[in-house]
Amino acid sequence: MTLKLCGFSGSNYYNKVKLQLLEKGVAFKEELVWTGLKDNPALSERSPLGKVPFLDTPQGVILESSVCCEYIEDAYPEHPLMPKDPYAKAKVRELIVYLDLHLELVARELFPQVYFGAPAMSEASLGRVRKLLTKSVASFAKLATFSPYIGGDAFTLADCAAITHLPVVAGACKLAFGEDLLADLPVRAYLKAMGERATVQKVNADRKVNTELMMARMKAK
Image 1 (cartoon, rainbow, N blue to C red):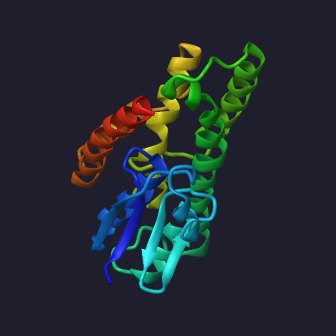
Image 2: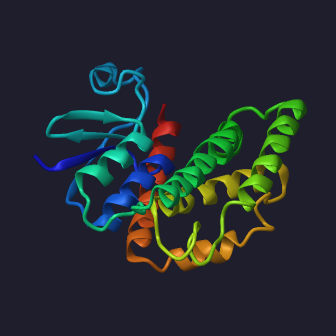
């Protein structure tokens, strides 16, 4: 059985795993699975919370993008995206945690309003999110090196997270606050350089097509 990545290409967490697979040269198939159990109750048998992405492996399903990434590194050790040195590996994980939890997850509160047409958040809520993001960006700036990769001179799993998360965080900030809170970091130059990689071009092209499909699907409901 070929490894199967389940979810949809409009999701940055899906694309984090997809980019890892492409960079490592792992053979895999994609299965389009929309999030949520309302329209697909049977999904609960594979993903109890109705979340994507998840991996369908010969042994069974693996949930949560971070766990999927760890499984891929362990199961397919060729072309590693994590250092062997324990400290260096921990520093890559540190960056991923900051990207996943302290940047993307905080900015995600803005997504319904700025990306999906939900009612505007209150000024108090916007102020709270802005304060948290400002603090997180300042902290992230002390960890990320952009030299030339997010954590140093080697492309790692942290880059898979950065390449997929940073554009949506920056975009949400601009739409919600009229300002890119990441503007003082070399994010644009970094993403431009990473965009020259064939794997990133593939992920971005698929994301664009799937996002259009996702928006059409939402309008049809």
